[in-house]
View (cartoon, rainbow, N blue to C red):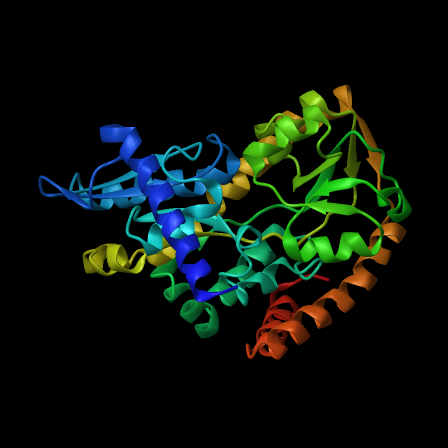
Length: 350
């Protein structure tokens, strides 16, 4: 790609995001400081759900601490910024904070994508929270995010993934030819078993399943399938695949963070702990709500542990290929992979 084309693409992104914010007018949020009050615009895709319980808890804690001098505005459903453009919007100063997932732009955060390697993480969400925190806090990842004027704020930790849609999958061979929505690094694994991988953001998936554009949606079980109502247009769901490897992160603008009073900065460890606790509680509540509904409406197909082990065994090849590709590009791929594996060994339970 020539430099001229790259410049044109960046310019188009700037214009597109700016146009969205301009068209929304006053409702799109306030500037960083308004009449003595510091205001952060936080952007997220999708509706309020278990995943957003983290930012909702952080909002309460930060606003209470400042006694009316700080406001964290949460803008749901991509009302400020398209789902894949949050990193760009922070870089351009259009929002102060937002969520992104590494699979939406692996070329922008190539080392952070290590956390999306299939079956690298465990099935224990709280252990994964510690692993993710350690990796996102690594100087290599901090430097990568700083290139976009962004800082790791707190986690977007997720449960393991299952698939829901209109293909029945009970073994790895059943994936052959099936169009499956999943993230970039996981795509490499599923394609080894004949799946046709598709990357799209969560808000796009309902219509894609309904119209038959894709066959199966890989989402965190159970809350995301419920929040995006995938069960309404599906016949089958897997249970037992427990696929890991989709990393999301809440980011804050470096400038916005540095402008905070020290008392708020000092709250960061508490904010991170409270956010994870709120999300986990939300996921547990979602299971209680959605599991009976799914089992009533769908055929929930057991995915045997022996089949899962076949996926795990093939994953290590994907890890090595990923690291070798980064190394060949002059990036410390093997270094960050070994660090991530060490954190899994340290905090994991398998």
